[in-house]
Length: 204
Image 1 (cartoon, rainbow, N blue to C red):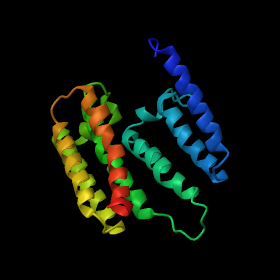
Image 2: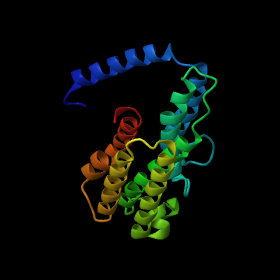
Image 3: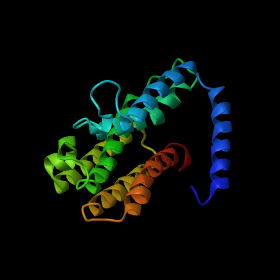
Image 4: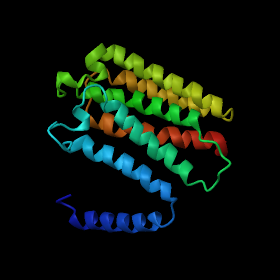
């Protein structure tokens, strides 16, 4: 950021313009959801008010579920709130499928940080071990696939490809990897799945 201040300013200004335009074209309930997700995101890092002197990520056992909840709220609930239709039912199956998927592919990040996280954080790898944690992550990805298959029967092979790629990357995270493996390849699964799901529903 220090090396490219002009680029940073362009990104900030462009984002601000996009934010203003978007804010004028969403349902009022969107703001409540954003406040909910925003507070979790802020206090995930910032110390909670009061005498606790801790943040949400340091509360034992809930870090990975907070990540999943915020991500799924923004990618599933927010679009639903802005459909401008009172006849469409909330997509519970898609919500839970996405939640399982996000939690599953977030487990490798706890494995990456297992030497850095305090033991009282009680992350999944700390509680059950690295290999069982990966087994659980793969199981969540497979349950995600089953739920998605109940949503669509179009081009199901695309969803299968996504699950196979996720499984390969999850297994690969057992061994020590460079940060790019997590922040590019595994994080990239968050883009790959919705893209393939869209293609399965509308593209192929």
